[in-house]
Structure formats: structure tokens, C-alpha cells
Image (cartoon, rainbow, N blue to C red; front, side, top):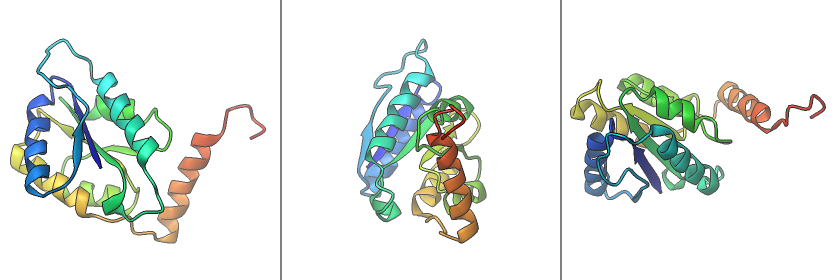
Length: 161
């Protein structure tokens, strides 16, 4: 499942992403905003998407079957900062095809952040497609680094964990 979320700054692009996912016959769930509201705030959508991805992501499955998220706000920075507050989320703000592919192959990113203001629809479409189609490399060095992130995430902060 692909979980989608966007505030007012990303609403238009999120609606386009839904069309593309339908064209590609990929399952998705729109977690909001469901209407354009200039007063809404991106953290609520980022948290909702990230929590759904974290709860549903079975890392033993192939990437195509795993839960993933796509978030959009004006810059992508806000939604990524918020999403990364949730355990097991590796959200990335992507600006081009190379960074989309790299984020999957090297970082096993499971949430994609896009800018509703700073990229064209054509760029966004290509980025979403490449990101969804790119697998984690499972190279030892990349696995080691992702594991280090997970270890830090699961420490309680008491100093003895």
C-alpha cells in the first residue's frame, strides 16, 4: 500500500500522484488533506502517513509489497522532518531522479517527500516512478548504516540500553 498525504502546499500535486498511481495500477490510500484548506498544517498529514507506514511495513517482504508513503508540502522539508519523528521511518526529500534512486538503494527510504512548489508535474511523476521501482541494494555497508539508524531509534535514552 502507498499512503499519501499533503497539506495545502502539496494538495494539487498529491491529486496528480493519485492519478498516476491509478494509471500504474498501484494501490494507494489518501490520508488527507481531502480538500484544499489554506489553513491546514503539514505535521498532521506527515504523522498520519508515517504512522501508517511504520505499522504496516513488513521489511521481510519485497519492496513492491511493502508499505510506503508519499508526502507533499511546499518544500518537502517540513513533511520529511515531521515524518522522521516516527520510529522506523526513513523519509527523504527528493529533488531529482538520482536522489530518488539513491534514497532507495542506499538508505532503504520508505517515505518520499516532494515539493509542491519547486518541481514540475513531469519531474514529480518521473521521481515517483523511479522511487517506487528502485530496490534497496542490500549491500553490507548500506545494511550496516540502516541498522545503525534503527539501533539509535530504539534506544530509550537512559544510557544503559
